[in-house]
Image 1 (tube, rainbow over the protein chains, first blue to last red):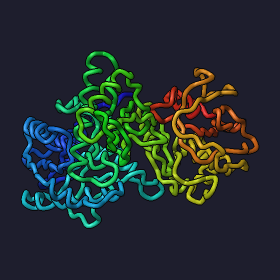
Image 2: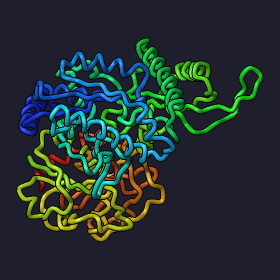
Image 3: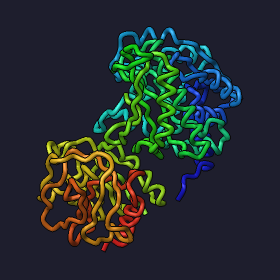
Image 4: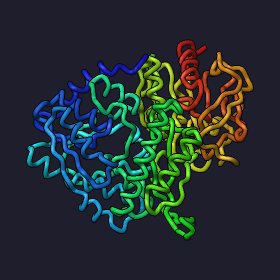
Length: 315
Length: 190
Protein backbone atom coordinates (compact mmCIF):
# COMPACT_ATOMS: atom_id res chain seq x y z
CA UNK A 1 0.00 0.00 0.00
CA UNK A 2 1.26 3.46 -0.82
CA UNK A 3 0.59 6.65 1.08
CA UNK A 4 -2.57 8.17 -0.41
CA UNK A 5 -2.06 11.95 -0.39
CA UNK A 6 -5.49 12.74 -1.85
CA UNK A 7 -7.29 10.69 0.79
CA UNK A 8 -5.14 12.29 3.49
CA UNK A 9 -6.05 15.79 2.26
CA UNK A 10 -9.78 15.01 2.21
CA UNK A 11 -9.63 13.56 5.71
CA UNK A 12 -7.57 16.38 7.21
CA UNK A 13 -9.63 19.19 5.68
CA UNK A 14 -12.64 17.67 7.45
CA UNK A 15 -10.75 17.22 10.71
CA UNK A 16 -9.43 20.81 10.69
CA UNK A 17 -12.96 22.14 10.08
CA UNK A 18 -14.19 20.16 13.07
CA UNK A 19 -11.30 21.22 15.28
CA UNK A 20 -11.55 24.94 14.49
CA UNK A 21 -15.05 26.36 14.85
CA UNK A 22 -13.76 29.96 14.77
CA UNK A 23 -10.52 31.44 13.53
CA UNK A 24 -6.93 30.20 13.54
CA UNK A 25 -3.46 31.44 12.86
CA UNK A 26 -0.76 29.30 11.34
CA UNK A 27 2.92 29.61 12.10
CA UNK A 28 4.53 29.53 8.66
CA UNK A 29 8.28 29.52 8.11
CA UNK A 30 7.99 29.02 4.36
CA UNK A 31 9.36 25.48 4.64
CA UNK A 32 7.71 22.35 3.30
CA UNK A 33 5.88 21.35 6.49
CA UNK A 34 4.39 24.66 7.59
CA UNK A 35 3.54 25.76 4.05
CA UNK A 36 1.77 22.47 3.39
CA UNK A 37 -0.09 22.81 6.68
CA UNK A 38 -1.03 26.38 5.70
CA UNK A 39 -2.51 25.27 2.38
CA UNK A 40 -4.39 22.40 4.06
CA UNK A 41 -5.74 24.70 6.76
CA UNK A 42 -6.54 27.33 4.12
CA UNK A 43 -8.67 24.79 2.27
CA UNK A 44 -10.50 23.98 5.48
CA UNK A 45 -10.88 27.50 6.89
CA UNK A 46 -10.59 29.97 4.02
CA UNK A 47 -10.65 33.54 5.36
CA UNK A 48 -10.76 32.28 8.93
CA UNK A 49 -7.02 31.52 8.68
CA UNK A 50 -4.09 33.93 9.07
CA UNK A 51 -0.58 32.80 8.21
CA UNK A 52 2.15 34.47 10.26
CA UNK A 53 5.80 34.44 9.23
CA UNK A 54 8.48 35.73 11.56
CA UNK A 55 11.74 37.09 10.22
CA UNK A 56 13.89 36.04 13.15
CA UNK A 57 17.11 37.36 11.67
CA UNK A 58 18.20 33.71 11.66
CA UNK A 59 16.97 32.80 8.20
CA UNK A 60 19.06 31.91 5.17
CA UNK A 61 20.17 34.27 2.44
CA UNK A 62 17.24 36.02 0.71
CA UNK A 63 14.86 33.66 2.49
CA UNK A 64 12.41 36.23 3.86
CA UNK A 65 11.79 37.72 0.41
CA UNK A 66 11.28 34.21 -0.95
CA UNK A 67 8.82 33.29 1.81
CA UNK A 68 6.86 36.48 1.07
CA UNK A 69 6.49 35.29 -2.53
CA UNK A 70 5.40 31.84 -1.31
CA UNK A 71 2.78 33.34 1.01
CA UNK A 72 1.45 35.60 -1.71
CA UNK A 73 1.19 32.65 -4.09
CA UNK A 74 -0.77 30.69 -1.48
CA UNK A 75 -3.56 33.21 -1.54
CA UNK A 76 -4.11 33.01 2.24
CA UNK A 77 -4.24 35.95 4.65
CA UNK A 78 -0.74 36.52 5.91
CA UNK A 79 1.38 38.76 8.10
CA UNK A 80 5.13 39.16 8.20
CA UNK A 81 6.69 40.11 11.52
CA UNK A 82 10.22 41.54 11.68
CA UNK A 83 11.74 40.52 14.99
CA UNK A 84 15.48 39.99 14.42
CA UNK A 85 16.53 42.35 17.24
CA UNK A 86 14.22 40.60 19.71
CA UNK A 87 15.60 37.17 18.84
CA UNK A 88 19.24 38.24 19.05
CA UNK A 89 18.57 39.97 22.37
CA UNK A 90 16.89 36.86 23.77
CA UNK A 91 19.77 34.65 22.60
CA UNK A 92 22.58 36.87 23.88
CA UNK A 93 25.10 34.92 25.93
CA UNK A 94 23.36 31.58 25.36
CA UNK A 95 25.40 28.71 23.96
CA UNK A 96 23.54 25.64 25.27
CA UNK A 97 21.69 24.17 22.27
CA UNK A 98 18.62 23.13 24.27
CA UNK A 99 18.34 26.60 25.84
CA UNK A 100 18.55 28.18 22.39
CA UNK A 101 15.70 25.99 21.15
CA UNK A 102 13.52 26.70 24.19
CA UNK A 103 14.11 30.46 23.99
CA UNK A 104 13.21 30.47 20.30
CA UNK A 105 10.06 28.41 20.89
CA UNK A 106 8.89 30.80 23.61
CA UNK A 107 9.71 33.87 21.51
CA UNK A 108 7.61 32.55 18.63
CA UNK A 109 4.58 32.11 20.88
CA UNK A 110 5.11 35.58 22.44
CA UNK A 111 4.85 36.98 18.92
CA UNK A 112 1.96 34.77 17.79
CA UNK A 113 -0.32 35.39 20.77
CA UNK A 114 -0.99 39.11 20.13
CA UNK A 115 -1.48 38.33 16.42
CA UNK A 116 -4.02 35.68 17.34
CA UNK A 117 -5.81 38.06 19.70
CA UNK A 118 -6.02 40.78 17.05
CA UNK A 119 -7.28 38.29 14.45
CA UNK A 120 -9.69 36.73 16.96
CA UNK A 121 -8.12 33.29 16.73
CA UNK A 122 -8.21 30.66 19.46
CA UNK A 123 -6.27 28.02 17.54
CA UNK A 124 -2.69 27.76 16.39
CA UNK A 125 -2.07 25.47 13.42
CA UNK A 126 1.47 24.12 13.18
CA UNK A 127 3.26 22.02 10.58
CA UNK A 128 4.58 19.63 13.24
CA UNK A 129 5.61 16.29 11.72
CA UNK A 130 6.42 12.92 13.32
CA UNK A 131 10.16 13.41 13.94
CA UNK A 132 9.43 16.69 15.80
CA UNK A 133 7.42 15.07 18.57
CA UNK A 134 9.37 11.80 18.50
CA UNK A 135 12.71 13.54 19.04
CA UNK A 136 11.20 15.95 21.58
CA UNK A 137 10.54 12.91 23.78
CA UNK A 138 8.23 12.59 26.76
CA UNK A 139 7.43 9.83 29.24
CA UNK A 140 9.46 6.77 28.21
CA UNK A 141 10.88 8.42 25.11
CA UNK A 142 14.16 10.23 25.62
CA UNK A 143 14.50 13.82 24.44
CA UNK A 144 17.03 13.88 21.62
CA UNK A 145 16.45 17.57 21.03
CA UNK A 146 13.83 20.18 21.88
CA UNK A 147 11.88 20.88 18.72
CA UNK A 148 10.75 24.48 19.22
CA UNK A 149 7.20 23.70 18.03
CA UNK A 150 6.72 20.82 20.49
CA UNK A 151 8.85 20.82 23.64
CA UNK A 152 9.74 24.50 23.08
CA UNK A 153 6.14 25.67 23.56
CA UNK A 154 5.59 27.53 26.84
CA UNK A 155 3.50 25.59 29.37
CA UNK A 156 1.10 28.50 29.83
CA UNK A 157 0.30 28.89 26.12
CA UNK A 158 -3.38 29.71 25.65
CA UNK A 159 -3.72 28.92 21.96
CA UNK A 160 -5.13 25.48 21.17
CA UNK A 161 -2.94 23.41 18.88
CA UNK A 162 -3.99 21.86 15.59
CA UNK A 163 -1.34 19.70 13.92
CA UNK A 164 -2.62 17.98 10.78
CA UNK A 165 0.77 16.53 9.74
CA UNK A 166 1.66 14.95 13.10
CA UNK A 167 1.79 11.39 11.82
CA UNK A 168 3.67 12.13 8.60
CA UNK A 169 7.34 12.07 7.71
CA UNK A 170 8.97 14.43 5.23
CA UNK A 171 8.52 12.14 2.21
CA UNK A 172 4.79 11.93 2.93
CA UNK A 173 4.51 15.69 3.51
CA UNK A 174 6.14 16.22 0.12
CA UNK A 175 3.54 13.93 -1.46
CA UNK A 176 0.78 16.02 0.15
CA UNK A 177 2.54 19.23 -0.95
CA UNK A 178 2.73 18.02 -4.55
CA UNK A 179 -0.94 17.06 -4.51
CA UNK A 180 -1.78 20.53 -3.21
CA UNK A 181 0.50 22.25 -5.74
CA UNK A 182 2.71 23.82 -3.07
CA UNK A 183 5.68 25.48 -4.78
CA UNK A 184 8.16 24.59 -2.03
CA UNK A 185 7.32 20.85 -2.09
CA UNK A 186 10.91 19.83 -2.94
CA UNK A 187 12.73 22.36 -0.74
CA UNK A 188 15.35 20.87 1.58
CA UNK A 189 14.41 20.58 5.27
CA UNK A 190 15.37 23.56 7.41
CA UNK A 191 15.07 23.59 11.21
CA UNK A 192 12.63 25.95 12.92
CA UNK A 193 15.35 27.51 15.12
CA UNK A 194 17.07 28.17 11.80
CA UNK A 195 20.71 29.27 11.73
CA UNK A 196 20.76 29.56 15.54
CA UNK A 197 21.41 25.81 15.69
CA UNK A 198 24.02 26.03 12.94
CA UNK A 199 26.13 28.45 14.92
CA UNK A 200 27.66 26.27 17.60
CA UNK A 201 28.15 28.42 20.68
CA UNK A 202 26.77 31.92 21.12
CA UNK A 203 24.46 33.27 18.43
CA UNK A 204 25.47 36.76 17.34
CA UNK A 205 24.45 38.67 14.20
CA UNK A 206 28.06 38.42 12.97
CA UNK A 207 28.31 34.66 13.46
CA UNK A 208 24.90 34.12 11.86
CA UNK A 209 25.97 36.26 8.89
CA UNK A 210 29.07 34.11 8.53
CA UNK A 211 27.24 30.78 8.50
CA UNK A 212 24.59 32.29 6.20
CA UNK A 213 27.24 33.10 3.59
CA UNK A 214 28.92 29.72 3.96
CA UNK A 215 25.58 27.91 3.67
CA UNK A 216 24.70 29.85 0.52
CA UNK A 217 27.96 28.65 -1.06
CA UNK A 218 27.26 25.03 -0.05
CA UNK A 219 23.76 25.24 -1.52
CA UNK A 220 25.00 26.92 -4.66
CA UNK A 221 27.80 24.43 -5.37
CA UNK A 222 25.83 21.31 -4.45
CA UNK A 223 22.87 22.36 -6.59
CA UNK A 224 25.17 23.24 -9.50
CA UNK A 225 26.95 19.87 -9.25
CA UNK A 226 23.64 18.01 -9.06
CA UNK A 227 22.23 19.84 -12.08
CA UNK A 228 25.40 18.98 -14.03
CA UNK A 229 24.84 15.31 -13.14
CA UNK A 230 27.99 15.04 -10.99
CA UNK A 231 26.01 13.82 -7.99
CA UNK A 232 22.43 13.27 -6.87
CA UNK A 233 20.92 16.19 -4.94
CA UNK A 234 21.29 15.23 -1.26
CA UNK A 235 18.34 15.17 1.12
CA UNK A 236 19.86 18.08 3.02
CA UNK A 237 23.09 20.11 2.65
CA UNK A 238 24.35 23.05 4.67
CA UNK A 239 27.18 24.68 6.62
CA UNK A 240 27.79 24.78 10.36
CA UNK A 241 29.99 27.31 12.16
CA UNK A 242 32.15 25.37 14.59
CA UNK A 243 33.54 27.23 17.63
CA UNK A 244 37.09 26.19 16.90
CA UNK A 245 39.77 28.54 15.68
CA UNK A 246 42.77 27.19 13.85
CA UNK A 247 45.93 28.51 12.28
CA UNK A 248 46.19 29.40 8.61
CA UNK A 249 48.40 31.37 6.30
CA UNK A 250 47.04 34.17 4.14
CA UNK A 251 49.44 36.06 1.89
CA UNK A 252 52.50 35.11 3.93
CA UNK A 253 50.76 36.21 7.12
CA UNK A 254 49.60 34.08 10.00
CA UNK A 255 45.82 34.00 10.54
CA UNK A 256 43.87 32.41 13.34
CA UNK A 257 40.41 31.91 11.90
CA UNK A 258 37.07 30.16 12.03
CA UNK A 259 36.18 26.62 11.03
CA UNK A 260 33.16 25.73 8.93
CA UNK A 261 31.80 22.19 8.76
CA UNK A 262 29.94 21.08 5.65
CA UNK A 263 27.11 18.62 6.22
CA UNK A 264 25.18 16.73 3.53
CA UNK A 265 23.05 13.64 4.07
CA UNK A 266 20.84 11.13 2.33
CA UNK A 267 17.57 10.25 4.05
CA UNK A 268 13.93 9.49 3.38
CA UNK A 269 12.32 10.48 6.64
CA UNK A 270 15.00 12.22 8.70
CA UNK A 271 14.96 9.38 11.26
CA UNK A 272 18.05 7.69 9.85
CA UNK A 273 20.60 9.13 7.46
CA UNK A 274 23.92 8.47 5.77
CA UNK A 275 26.41 11.17 4.89
CA UNK A 276 26.47 12.06 1.20
CA UNK A 277 29.36 10.80 -0.88
CA UNK A 278 29.98 14.20 -2.47
CA UNK A 279 32.71 14.02 -5.15
CA UNK A 280 36.01 15.48 -3.99
CA UNK A 281 36.05 18.00 -6.83
CA UNK A 282 32.78 19.44 -5.53
CA UNK A 283 34.06 19.50 -1.93
CA UNK A 284 37.19 21.21 -3.23
CA UNK A 285 35.17 23.99 -4.88
CA UNK A 286 33.06 24.45 -1.73
CA UNK A 287 36.18 24.65 0.43
CA UNK A 288 38.02 27.09 -1.83
CA UNK A 289 35.01 29.36 -2.18
CA UNK A 290 34.17 29.44 1.54
CA UNK A 291 37.76 30.12 2.60
CA UNK A 292 38.12 32.84 -0.05
CA UNK A 293 34.69 34.46 0.03
CA UNK A 294 33.71 34.29 3.70
CA UNK A 295 36.03 36.57 5.67
CA UNK A 296 37.49 35.01 8.79
CA UNK A 297 37.14 31.37 7.73
CA UNK A 298 40.39 29.58 6.97
CA UNK A 299 39.36 25.94 7.39
CA UNK A 300 36.55 23.74 6.06
CA UNK A 301 35.85 20.19 7.22
CA UNK A 302 33.37 17.63 5.91
CA UNK A 303 31.11 15.77 8.36
CA UNK A 304 31.16 12.04 7.59
CA UNK A 305 28.80 10.88 10.37
CA UNK A 306 25.63 8.88 9.86
CA UNK A 307 22.42 9.12 11.93
CA UNK A 308 22.61 7.33 14.30
CA UNK A 309 25.07 7.78 15.98
CA UNK A 310 25.01 11.50 15.05
CA UNK A 311 21.93 13.54 14.17
CA UNK A 312 21.62 15.46 10.92
CA UNK A 313 21.85 18.89 12.54
CA UNK A 314 24.71 19.55 14.96
CA UNK A 315 22.48 20.89 17.76
CA UNK B 1 -5.14 -8.23 9.67
CA UNK B 2 -4.53 -6.36 12.93
CA UNK B 3 -1.06 -6.01 14.42
CA UNK B 4 -0.44 -3.45 17.16
CA UNK B 5 2.84 -1.87 18.24
CA UNK B 6 3.66 -1.69 21.95
CA UNK B 7 5.52 1.58 22.58
CA UNK B 8 8.58 1.14 24.76
CA UNK B 9 9.72 4.70 24.07
CA UNK B 10 11.72 4.14 20.88
CA UNK B 11 12.78 6.74 18.34
CA UNK B 12 11.52 4.34 15.67
CA UNK B 13 8.29 3.04 17.29
CA UNK B 14 6.27 5.23 14.92
CA UNK B 15 8.30 3.88 11.98
CA UNK B 16 7.13 0.35 12.91
CA UNK B 17 3.56 1.66 12.80
CA UNK B 18 4.25 3.24 9.41
CA UNK B 19 5.78 0.08 7.90
CA UNK B 20 2.81 -2.02 9.10
CA UNK B 21 0.37 0.57 7.73
CA UNK B 22 2.13 0.55 4.35
CA UNK B 23 1.81 -3.25 4.32
CA UNK B 24 -1.94 -2.84 4.56
CA UNK B 25 -2.26 -3.90 8.19
CA UNK B 26 -4.67 -2.32 10.66
CA UNK B 27 -2.30 -1.01 13.31
CA UNK B 28 -2.07 1.23 16.34
CA UNK B 29 0.61 2.31 18.80
CA UNK B 30 -0.32 1.40 22.37
CA UNK B 31 1.47 2.33 25.62
CA UNK B 32 3.40 -0.49 27.28
CA UNK B 33 1.14 -0.43 30.34
CA UNK B 34 -1.93 -1.40 28.29
CA UNK B 35 -3.56 -4.43 30.03
CA UNK B 36 -3.18 -7.57 27.96
CA UNK B 37 -6.97 -7.82 27.96
CA UNK B 38 -6.97 -4.68 25.81
CA UNK B 39 -5.02 -6.50 23.11
CA UNK B 40 -7.65 -9.07 22.16
CA UNK B 41 -8.54 -9.98 18.57
CA UNK B 42 -5.09 -9.11 17.26
CA UNK B 43 -3.16 -11.23 14.79
CA UNK B 44 0.23 -10.20 16.11
CA UNK B 45 2.14 -7.84 18.35
CA UNK B 46 5.35 -5.86 17.90
CA UNK B 47 7.29 -4.91 21.04
CA UNK B 48 9.20 -1.77 20.09
CA UNK B 49 12.65 -0.69 21.11
CA UNK B 50 13.15 2.19 23.47
CA UNK B 51 15.23 4.22 25.84
CA UNK B 52 14.82 1.82 28.83
CA UNK B 53 18.07 -0.03 29.54
CA UNK B 54 16.87 -3.62 29.70
CA UNK B 55 20.34 -4.80 30.70
CA UNK B 56 20.43 -2.32 33.59
CA UNK B 57 16.86 -1.53 34.61
CA UNK B 58 14.06 -3.57 33.03
CA UNK B 59 11.44 -1.96 35.31
CA UNK B 60 10.42 0.58 32.65
CA UNK B 61 9.25 -2.16 30.33
CA UNK B 62 5.70 -2.03 31.71
CA UNK B 63 3.59 -5.06 30.91
CA UNK B 64 5.84 -6.53 28.21
CA UNK B 65 6.22 -9.63 30.41
CA UNK B 66 2.46 -10.13 30.49
CA UNK B 67 2.28 -9.85 26.72
CA UNK B 68 4.99 -12.48 26.32
CA UNK B 69 3.17 -14.83 28.72
CA UNK B 70 -0.46 -14.24 27.84
CA UNK B 71 -0.86 -12.62 24.43
CA UNK B 72 -1.03 -16.00 22.73
CA UNK B 73 -0.27 -14.89 19.15
CA UNK B 74 2.90 -14.11 17.18
CA UNK B 75 5.21 -11.54 18.77
CA UNK B 76 8.12 -9.65 17.25
CA UNK B 77 10.42 -7.96 19.78
CA UNK B 78 12.74 -5.28 18.43
CA UNK B 79 15.87 -3.98 20.21
CA UNK B 80 14.76 -3.34 23.83
CA UNK B 81 11.71 -5.56 23.09
CA UNK B 82 14.09 -8.31 21.97
CA UNK B 83 16.41 -7.89 24.95
CA UNK B 84 13.50 -7.93 27.39
CA UNK B 85 12.18 -11.08 25.71
CA UNK B 86 15.50 -12.84 26.26
CA UNK B 87 15.66 -11.83 29.92
CA UNK B 88 12.01 -12.65 30.56
CA UNK B 89 12.36 -16.20 29.26
CA UNK B 90 15.46 -16.95 31.32
CA UNK B 91 18.28 -15.67 29.11
CA UNK B 92 20.43 -12.63 29.80
CA UNK B 93 20.74 -9.08 28.50
CA UNK B 94 23.59 -6.80 29.57
CA UNK B 95 25.50 -3.72 28.44
CA UNK B 96 27.09 -4.57 25.10
CA UNK B 97 30.88 -4.91 24.94
CA UNK B 98 30.72 -2.96 21.68
CA UNK B 99 27.46 -1.01 21.35
CA UNK B 100 26.40 -0.54 17.73
CA UNK B 101 25.04 2.69 16.26
CA UNK B 102 24.18 3.05 12.60
CA UNK B 103 25.36 0.75 9.85
CA UNK B 104 26.20 -2.89 10.49
CA UNK B 105 26.31 -6.13 8.54
CA UNK B 106 23.86 -8.91 9.35
CA UNK B 107 24.99 -12.47 8.93
CA UNK B 108 22.03 -14.88 8.79
CA UNK B 109 23.23 -18.22 10.13
CA UNK B 110 20.03 -20.25 10.52
CA UNK B 111 17.35 -20.33 7.83
CA UNK B 112 14.04 -19.12 9.21
CA UNK B 113 10.69 -17.90 7.96
CA UNK B 114 11.66 -14.37 9.11
CA UNK B 115 14.51 -14.23 6.57
CA UNK B 116 12.81 -16.22 3.82
CA UNK B 117 13.81 -15.04 0.35
CA UNK B 118 16.61 -12.82 1.69
CA UNK B 119 20.37 -13.06 1.18
CA UNK B 120 22.60 -14.44 3.94
CA UNK B 121 24.34 -11.11 4.44
CA UNK B 122 22.89 -7.64 4.22
CA UNK B 123 23.15 -4.15 5.70
CA UNK B 124 21.09 -3.34 8.78
CA UNK B 125 20.75 -0.27 11.00
CA UNK B 126 21.49 -0.48 14.72
CA UNK B 127 21.10 1.69 17.80
CA UNK B 128 21.71 -0.16 21.06
CA UNK B 129 23.68 0.06 24.29
CA UNK B 130 22.64 -3.37 25.63
CA UNK B 131 22.49 -6.76 23.96
CA UNK B 132 21.37 -10.34 24.51
CA UNK B 133 24.32 -12.16 26.05
CA UNK B 134 22.67 -15.52 26.84
CA UNK B 135 19.89 -17.06 24.75
CA UNK B 136 16.87 -18.15 26.80
CA UNK B 137 16.12 -21.88 26.95
CA UNK B 138 14.03 -23.00 23.99
CA UNK B 139 15.34 -20.22 21.75
CA UNK B 140 17.68 -20.47 18.80
CA UNK B 141 20.00 -17.73 17.51
CA UNK B 142 19.33 -16.88 13.87
CA UNK B 143 21.76 -14.13 12.93
CA UNK B 144 24.76 -12.15 14.14
CA UNK B 145 26.80 -9.06 13.27
CA UNK B 146 30.56 -8.54 13.66
CA UNK B 147 30.05 -6.99 17.12
CA UNK B 148 26.92 -8.75 18.37
CA UNK B 149 26.31 -12.50 18.39
CA UNK B 150 22.52 -12.42 18.90
CA UNK B 151 21.09 -10.12 16.22
CA UNK B 152 18.05 -12.36 15.77
CA UNK B 153 16.47 -15.21 17.72
CA UNK B 154 13.26 -17.17 17.83
CA UNK B 155 11.52 -19.70 20.00
CA UNK B 156 11.98 -23.22 18.61
CA UNK B 157 8.26 -23.96 18.36
CA UNK B 158 6.32 -20.78 19.24
CA UNK B 159 5.98 -17.81 16.85
CA UNK B 160 8.03 -15.54 19.10
CA UNK B 161 10.88 -13.63 17.47
CA UNK B 162 13.47 -11.10 18.61
CA UNK B 163 15.61 -8.75 16.51
CA UNK B 164 18.42 -6.57 17.82
CA UNK B 165 18.64 -4.51 14.61
CA UNK B 166 15.85 -2.28 13.30
CA UNK B 167 13.92 -3.62 10.29
CA UNK B 168 11.60 -0.58 10.42
CA UNK B 169 14.35 1.87 9.47
CA UNK B 170 14.63 3.02 5.86
CA UNK B 171 18.37 2.36 5.76
CA UNK B 172 18.01 -1.30 6.77
CA UNK B 173 18.00 -3.47 3.65
CA UNK B 174 15.00 -5.83 3.28
CA UNK B 175 13.30 -4.37 6.37
CA UNK B 176 9.90 -4.39 4.67
CA UNK B 177 10.43 -8.02 3.61
CA UNK B 178 11.20 -9.02 7.20
CA UNK B 179 7.93 -7.43 8.35
CA UNK B 180 6.11 -9.13 5.47
CA UNK B 181 7.55 -12.47 6.57
CA UNK B 182 6.41 -11.78 10.14
CA UNK B 183 2.93 -10.98 8.81
CA UNK B 184 2.90 -14.36 7.02
CA UNK B 185 3.46 -15.93 10.41
CA UNK B 186 0.63 -13.80 11.80
CA UNK B 187 -1.63 -15.14 9.07
CA UNK B 188 -0.66 -18.74 9.80
CA UNK B 189 0.78 -18.88 13.31
CA UNK B 190 1.23 -22.68 13.40
